[in-house]
Amino acid sequence: MNSSELPMAARDYGHFGVTADPEAFGLVTSVALTSAGPITVRHGRRSGRDDARAIILLHGAAGSWSTFTPLLSAADLGATGGAYASFEDLVIPDLAGWGDSALATRAEDRSIEVVAASVAEVARSLGYDRWMIVGHSLGGFVALELAAAEQTATERVLLVSPTTFGVAAAVRQPFRELRNLPAYVGMLGVMLVLARLGRFGTRFVALIGPTRFFRRSMGPLFAHPGRIAQSVYRALAAEARPLSFVLASACAGEYDARRWAGIRCPVRSLRGSRDVFVADDDHVRLAATIPDFVGGILDDAGHFGQIERPVEVLERLFPATRASAAS
Image (cartoon, rainbow, N blue to C red; front, side, top):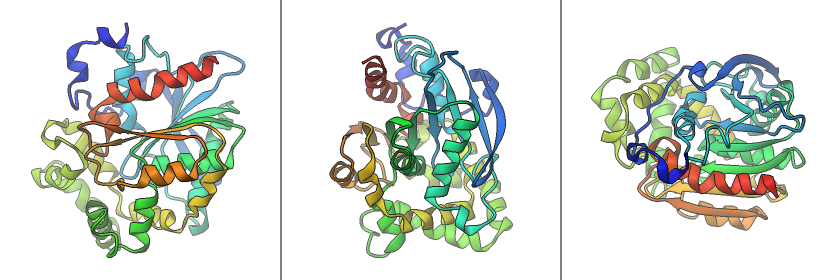
């Protein structure tokens, strides 16, 4: 099945919901011991090739491995030209502090550098010594650090709404950047308050998750919030961990993005045309920093392109990946 033969509904905005069942995608769950602590990872679909390259999917803040299940569902319908054509040798970790992976105990183990190193450790524990990375939001930030640190092992980076320069600036100077990224600055402020409440803050978010109030508060993240499946909002509520969000933001603000100039692999990125978490000039600044960078716009999408328009994400990012792998 090729992309033109897909059921028309598959192209509908927000057609695929989120599922937390790894077996539905032929994946198993393991725990790897890393420098950031024990990391839970879903993996599978082994190609059996001796030189297999892992496809590592990195979720964003307020996310987990399940953030990518709409993308996997679209791929399973043949959106890339054949079932599993671009999705063999999957490695999908829950980054430290999210999903089933606990936040690192020591403050020094929560940096972007250590989180990225833990991803490499997970991949190597599964037998992979080279990989392609797909990163969404904060996962894109981590993906770029991993590519900079592991220049030989990283063959390609694909980004969906990566939060990079704009978010880092908003963390450092929230009042000055309020006009550029008001939704992010506002959410960071709310998370700071909830983080100070400890477990009560986390429980509060979980309690309001099923409510209309929560859907409206998360609405700016999507181009059409009313057309997003309830399963997506439930997942966001479960993963909206205030302390992890605040600490991850602080680490992004402290990070030296000049490291990305050392990336040697191709980097391709899509941001939603209505994305409120990515600054207008982020792609320009990434292109000025990374030697081989190309950015594009995903029309009529917000911050979660892989959920809102997964077929288009596959068509625009993954065909080039297959071509490069064959060359």
